[in-house]
Image (tube, rainbow, N blue to C red):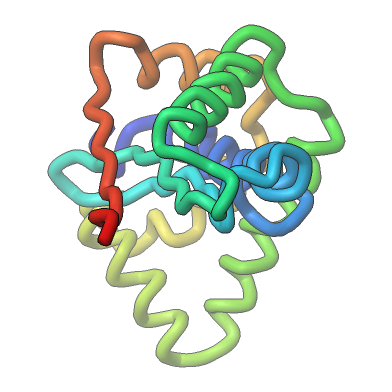
Length: 165
């Protein structure tokens, strides 16, 4: 979606729940439990004209590209069908809001925040709205956007495999 989309706060929170830190869903399942990945994340690339949402995983010695794709799709399916927990949502909100406020503690951080507001929302005053927009996101909002943007017919899967010697 475009960066000014009302869906962006819910997508930012979903990305945090899926892949921010060692207690995130993707890390817990693919890295720790199944041990098929060294790294797994949901990446939200925001651009003024429209963005990109990616699931990225780097296999461990035990994992294959096919296993990683299957496991990523399983985790996506879980969030689409069952949503997230209140605890996960609260944690994600705290992480993102804390990061946003911490960024604004410096002059450079304030300038970056204002610049993004101008580019993405078309006005500097939008810098004061992002935290409020995050705070009102519900579990249903996250489930809705994950179903809206992730469908079997709108994805590209790319495997980067090392050639065997």
